[in-house]
Amino acid sequence: MPVDVFTVLAEPTRRRILDQLRRDERSVGELVDGLGISQPAASKHLRVLRDAGFVTVRTAARQRIYRLDPGPLRTVDDWLDPYRRLWTRHLDALERHLDSQEQ
Image 1 (tube, one colour):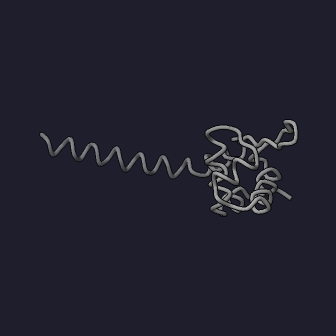
Image 2 (image 1 turned 90 degrees about the vertical axis):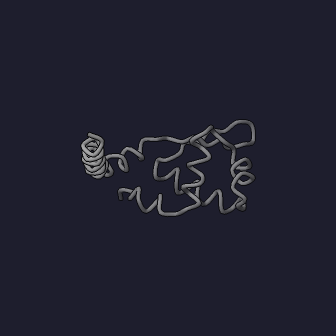
């Protein structure tokens, strides 16, 4: 069954994990320390993110290192695109209006 990326991203802790991984790959311990959550909670959220394709994992010695995979975020970007164009149109109209006020 396909994963709904919006359902995965609806959980605030998962978004915080992605924010941490956006900067650099991290071990579970680093995520636990950085986010102030328990190790079992971090593991639960990381499993959901991994199953949805948002993160990849590799093993280094006895640590599991997680890295952001931006692929599923393209779905979000595609969904936002028409709204972004709508917003840009409104900003362009505002710019034209402000320019006309200066003259």
